[in-house]
Image (cartoon, rainbow, N blue to C red; front, side):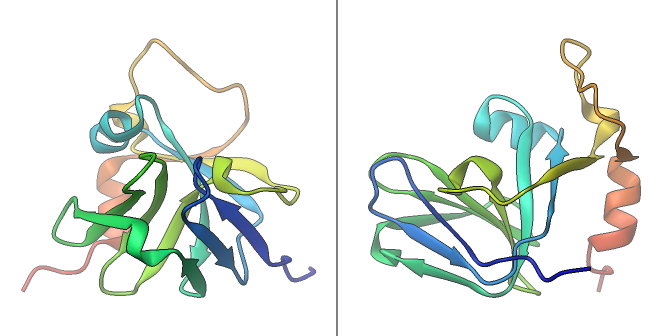
Length: 142
């Protein structure tokens, strides 16, 4: 299996540029109520690990959306830039940010139990409920 190529993306106004050393090759959809409220629909994102460089960081505003995660957006145009796990500093970037998207495959959906009935994707994907996601990724309670 070959290593993914580095990728770059930017916000709508160009004030923020993100460089990702090793983006995943897959795209996932999050159907949680926060992601749907944040973007008006499911978040289609790529796991990008911790090696994400942000140019124009002074133009980024960060919102603590939960005790374990933050959401970043451009202060000028409002483009959604990232969902970041605080403890691991692991980034998930909206797939639409990438200037020249590598060959991505849409293969997973999370919070499938929160997905409204008014839309559905035709792709055959791995589906996880919210409880399954929390069991896999959430830090244990103190």
